[in-house]
Length: 122
Image (cartoon, rainbow, N blue to C red; front, side, top):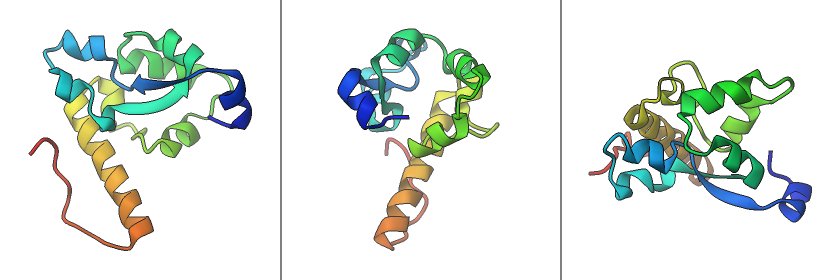
């Protein structure tokens, strides 16, 4: 997880959750690849390790690390982590919709307002 020590000793990168090259190879345009729902801040070493791997591959490697708090890390970034998450099946569009719903719910929680279910790219 990001903390003061990590911020001061390591570079922090703006990371594509579904790597840009991975999505480009599957026909997604720049607008779709670079949307804010496909971004999070991570340390440079992890970003380099992930490179252009499929999310299902790098997430399984992280999940299998002894002591890695997968659920806590992903939920702190509002990233869907359950078995239905598009991360595990490399399914980008459902992942974006799932993350959009998590972000919208977090905004509603702090703002006290509710809206209809958000939709992507309309």
